Amino acid sequence: MGLDGKRILVTGAGKGIGEATARLLASRGANVIALSRSQDDLDRLSAETGCETIACDLAYLDDIEKCVQDALPLDGLVNNAGTTALEPFLETSLASFDHLMTVNTKAAMVIAQVATRDMIERSVAGAIVNVSSVAASIGIADHTSYCASKAALDALTRVMAIELGPHGIRVNSVNPAVTLTPMAVKAWSDPAKADPVKNRIAMGRFIEPPEVADVIAYLLDDGASMVTGHSLAIDGGLLIT
Image (cartoon, rainbow, N blue to C red; front, side, top):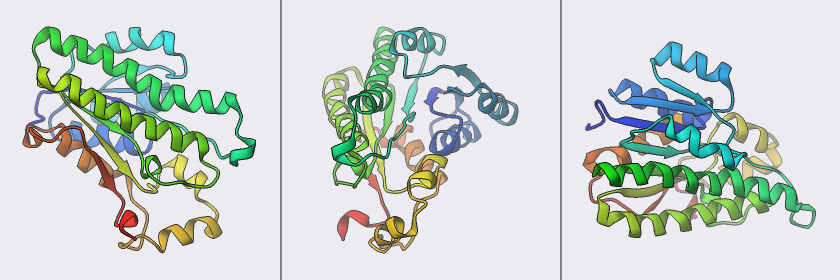
């Protein structure tokens, strides 16, 4: 695997998929910069992996550029940070819709802009992985804002891949089905909601964060040198049913 010595920023690294990814990349020799809102999570992760840390709340777009500047130079980026809100469509507020679009989509765009401008200036053939969701392509009750924000992230991924490809920068998204992060455990705690979805998954279970991290690591690696512009479902077969 070609990750040894590469500087890779992982957002939302305090928990769930981001934490699993930061740990995996560090174990494969990458120099990981972990970004999260929670300093306590970052301190624990740094003590256990030796990663660099940046505390930043991505809901505040004006602060993002400075936070990412502190991480430069980069060879790779994992836009993992995200949030959700459980609201029926008729009760979805503009405030929550705007918040999810900011954290899940706008922040990813701003972070990638800062990172890739620097990559281009240094002539670095980098790689970016945006952590999306199967919710980008299917409807899920009570997830209006989340589904919309992830669909927008997939669209952003495709445009980034087209425009950054000539600079040698690859951009893909991973699109997990229900992954047992703290956020997902909250959203899918009701068996009446979870069981019908689980029963449609060919593998018969929900996903663990390290299973997503493995795919992210592959997409960052030079072994995926001609893989770009894809939204890769990690769904245990959900979308084929």
